[in-house]
Amino acid sequence: MLLQDFLSSKEGNFASMTAVMLPVLLGAIGLAVDVGTMSSAHSKLQTAVDAAVLAASRINDKALDREQVFKDYLAGNLVGEARLANLVSSLEVDQGINYISTTGRASADVDLFFAAFIGSGNRVSVSASAFESRNNLEVVMALDNTGSMGSARMAELRKAATSLVDILSTVHMPDSEPKRVVKAALVPFVTAVNVKGEGFDLSWIDNYVDPLTLLNKSYGARYHGSSFTPQTNHLELFKALGTEWKGCVEARPSPYNLSDAAPDITNPDTLFVPYFAPDNPGKNATSPNSGTAWNNSYLNDTFGKNDQAKLMQAARYYNVASKDKTINAVDYHQSRTTGPNYACPTPILPLTSDFDKLKAEIARMIHWEGSGTNVSEGLAWSVRVLSPGEPYTQGAPFNSENTSKFVVVFTDGENTVFGASSQAYNKSDYGSYSFLDHGRLGETDRSKALSKVNTMTKDVCTDLKSKSVEIFTVLLGADTAANRKLYSECATTTEHYYPTSDVSELDTVFRKIASRIAKLYVTD
Image (cartoon, rainbow, N blue to C red):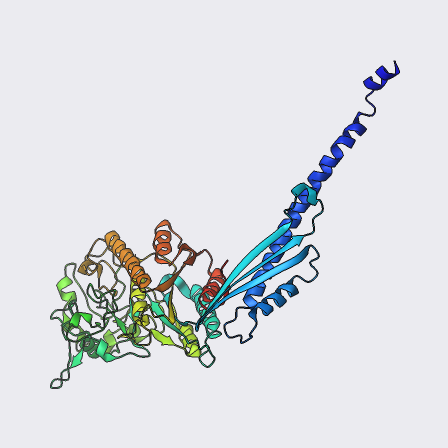
């Protein structure tokens, strides 16, 4: 009876079950604690090894015992870390004249709460590699200065570009051993690029002065003066207007439009034609900056509906009374220009180690309304700036063993043909490929022409990468499907593509890019 009562009693069941389950519960809790401890210890050891391998990997550090430096930094970063015991570490060093590559390894036992549940697996192992090259650096910033940037965005772009230059300047070491020379260049672009800055040479231009008549003559570049009847040298038209040529140039005919072929008077198509924006119909007036209208009327004349032939008459530019010219024809400091230098940005600054001068040129950049956006033109001039041959000669040879070359290209929109879409002729603003209906892009349809510009942009990127140039692409508020495909493929890798949604992000992105170009870094 007593036995039966005991077996049927439920009063002690909970205690019995607890007695049976307690070791299991404690084991599960202990296991969870130990897993967390292992993970935390692994992370702590990895961070310590990362820091130690960087400390031991400075190429200019003349310390004879890098392994000791590695061990000292590792121990210093693990002070007070009681969980790690029996630390073992090693450092492998591969050092050449202009580079150092290191790999650090470390392992340690972890003091666990309930080690029995995970057997003997209480040891963590980590590794990290670092690389620093003392290759010379050549960096071109190809920066969109189009009207959509506006004053506020341009201010942030100037700030970001200045930050990049400041970081590059810290690794310019021409007087230490091993030496490292850092050069950077600035290529502002709209649809055209201005070359009339430092290093400019008239020998690049399709122009010579006839010694008898003192007139500007063409060597015969294919499109020079083709917008005028009779075909007229553009510098003669500037002279007739009493206006200075600011320095923008038209794109060369294919295949030279995207190449770094040197200007050569024996091959006139390799020469650059001075940019001269023809006067649009109507009275002189400040540009309305319209996508559908004519935007650049600076001569005070009248036109009928079918007066396209009159528009091309070169005689219109001669003997023009000063009162008939718009005051903005020679004003280079307003974002909305009118005149033959329409939407021509500030000039290129070629490769230089004068970082103060470079920052001063960055500070001069403003946005220029009208004409559109042609990234391929900015990239084509980036190739020419990096090239060792004319028109700019500051660059080392491509694929040089001791020089690394980079292009940072920035834009805030898609390639664009702008202006005059509803007009009877021209069908666009003037740009480096003249007017849309002149067919210089191989197309007179706007959509097809833009597709061609995108293809040209991709082609220049391909050319740069074939020359071992590393490309970073930065977009501001323009991560459209088309742009994402174009600029992620243009970049050296998808990690070199930086889409940004807010202008405030630009400074951070440019700093990251500068650090990737210039700094010692952990590779894994």
